[in-house]
Image (cartoon, rainbow over all chains, first blue to last red; front, side, top):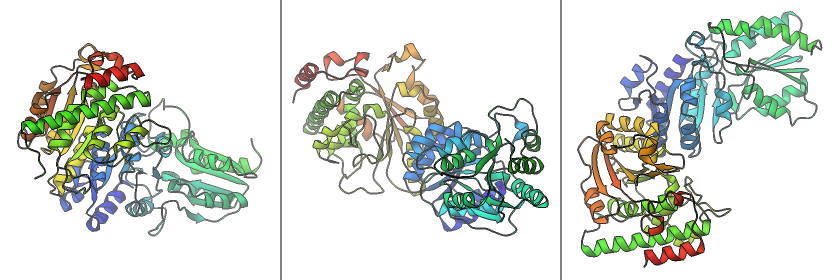
Length: 308
Length: 277
């Protein structure tokens, strides 16, 4: 996703001279092509995320279209008040780009884990939150963002995620993508859980369980029309995210369904509300917290059979 | 091109305008029952020297080449609102809506809350990074305008001020001009009793800025300093303005109490009498 983001932005910058790329001293060699093609439009601000967010706001108020890049906790939480007061309050055309969603940087430890970012970004007024699910969705997200006016948060995974979509896709902000149809359960996935959602659906299909898979790269604004349509049809809704159980994508879906009488049961697959107490890679944490295709398929089957 | 001259008559006019802004400020603090009157009075002369001398602006006809101003010490915004009204950005009658229910002039400026207000502030440490971004965009677009930003001394406790100081010096943003309203009192006491703020000018010098120290209530000295900008080619400029919190109203001067207390009707009458016409 990281490389797809940089390629998409580098391509888009040719047609849109407003686009600038700022980094908080992260992304070694990643931006060389952008920097070479667009001198003066790439800036390493230094290890100073608060200043990066403020400078980006000033640039945006003067007509530029900056993307500011760092690892998720630094891009979102280190400079949270600048994101709130400077970027969001001014409706500045700034996209905060966080790399390393969820446990992408697992071995780096909890300082680098990104399990609260969607919650804290989506609560901000004027903020749009995008969590693409694979490289193709990342390219589509960059295009959607450039056509969009206002603050945004783009949550990336890292490098090397599998291609889930076999061909390029397109979505407008607020739209979701249906990957598979089915009438028993709808798996609503955001961000880097998409490949897992598709694999879990395949396992469920082998057990005769009809599984719809919806990719929801836009967490805010939520595609409530798609959620309502699924809710009318299936017996179980399940959300998948590599983020805390609290306040993220599953939380957003739950908030929406709370106002929907007769909605089916909702199960949220997510990370627990705690800091990791042991080290490990992304797959280790996914296994630990039941976020593998097999564990998800098993739990869905149990829930459909009436398990508490 | 839009510069005023420095004759005695012009200085007398600036001083008269400063008195008008001080009167409006204490009136707003009284009517709005708001705090921070001391902080606002502290920066009146700086704002007057900026808006009636230094800033290349034309309120009815904004231009991309104009100078910009960021009121980073947003809590002093009574003086800012009153100066904008005095300069003709909006009718002075709007000042009566300050801090009123349903109004657009809160105790810290909103974006677009009134004509002339581009940047909202209120949380300290935000203005200098934004000013640096505005200045960088002007450099990229080869625009002539400079970006002035007014900070409080207590605000210099914030790490983001020093991050942005290094950034602006590193990028050689000589179109940035920071002014520090250095009255020596912050919210809960004397700056130097709270952190090692002094020597403040030397800190800015060490961060790569061209520094000038000036009496922040001597309008003639402020005018001369602004005329000397940029203080050094290729470096951002900072003007450390020595000020008195509550300046112009004897019983408010150097009293931390007036960071909090709204003036009563009696306080207001005494203050207006002292400030005079």
